[in-house]
Structure formats: structure tokens, C-alpha cells
Amino acid sequence: MPTLHLLGTGAALAGASRTTTMLAFESESSVIVVDCGGDAVQRLLMAKVPLERIEALILTHEHPDHVSGFPLFMEKIWLAQRRRPLPVYGLKEALSQARRTFETFNTSGWKGMPEIQWREVERRGGAEVLEDEQWRITASPGEHSVPVIGIQVEDIGSGKAVAYSADTERSDAITRLARGADILVHEASGDFSGHTGIEDAARVAADAGARRLVLVHLPPEPSERELEAARSHIPAAEFGTDGGRYDF
Ligand SMILES: [Zn+2]
Ligand SMILES: [Zn+2]
Image (tube, rainbow, N blue to C red; front, side):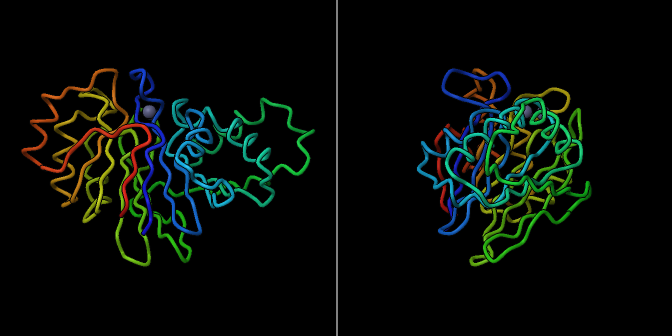
């Protein structure tokens, strides 16, 4: 049974117990990491996720709280003796941001540094990200101040899926992406442009028929009162916490 790890659950500025929002999907043979605005490798180690199983990194968009840890991520997996290539998936804007960020460092002395394979994802509903014997991952664009994708990660063996909104306003495309998901991981930064409030995230989960809603990208003091209101749309709604894990 695969596991969703919440490596981080904060907005760009969050409370002391949360770093930036980053996820990992772990099976017995494969790990997919989503975003690296903070020190994703340290969080993977805390979660006891074997680094050698990392199959791919997905970048949802170009903002610093989602990509700025990329050079550190590469340095750490290289030091952990990874040698096989690392595929990195995302929209072209996110990939070029990660590439620029990485290229500000002189890595010419990093002998055996894994090759980075940039894999561009199309900006359209249901775009294929990757499919192998473990996962089927698709993406749909959300609505944010820059191009962004949410993703759906399906465990091929069980057919169960987790959807992740990434940074977005309440979005029909994300609702469609999340249809029937076992778990919807939705951002809940607040009711302002480019983001979603708690109750609207719950409406998306209810419209999509998701079984459980886990709220991430949380501000310093997420409102318990709003969470209570959200439960009238979907009873299984909760704030994600750093280090949280969910089998699906
Ligand atoms: Zn953003
Ligand atoms: Zn963000």
C-alpha cells in the first residue's frame, strides 16, 4: 500500500511548526517527490523514506516556496551517492526557474552528479506526467499568479488516487482532476487572489467526491472555526501537519 508523506505543510510564510509545502509518494520500489521549496531531503530522511528510491521530482510551479531548494536537493542526493539520472517534471516556466537556480552554482567539481532530465508537462487538463508500473500521474492547470499544475497520483495496483491542488484559486479544472480521489490535498492559504480559503477547498473536495480533505499551504494561524465550517461540506477534513503520513 503506497504512502503519502506531507514533508511540509506551510505557505511561503507559515508558523514555526511548518516548512514550505512539499509532498512525497512512497511505494516499496519507488518514491515521487513533489516540490522542493525547503530542504526536501532532510524531510525525506525524517520520514525514513529511502533516498535511493526517488524516481522523479515534480515541480508544480516557479515560486520560491516550491523550487528554491532544488540546488540543495541535487547536492544532497549526489552526496548520498545517487548516480542514475533524475527526471524533473513540470511546466516549462517551472523547469526553467529550477534550471536557472541550479546554474547559479558552480557544480563542475561534483564528480558523478546525476544527470538532470528535464521533462516538460503540457499545460492542459489531464496532461500526462508519467506512467510506470507503479504510478499513473496526470496534471491539470490551476489558477494562480503564474502558470501552475495540480496533480493526480494514482497507484496502478489498487486504482486509488491522491490529488494535490498546488497553489490555486478555487478551480473547476482542479475539481475535475480530483474526481473520486481517495485523498484531496488542497491548499488553504486564504481567500485572496491566486489562493483558496478553507471552506472553498472543502467545496472542491465535496464537488469532486473526494473521501478525505487534507489542507496544506497553511498560513501562520489557520482558523479552527473555518475548519469546523468546512466539515459541513466534507466531514473528513483536517489540517495537514509536517511529517503527516497517509496510506492509500
Ligand atoms: Zn505560488
Ligand atoms: Zn506556494
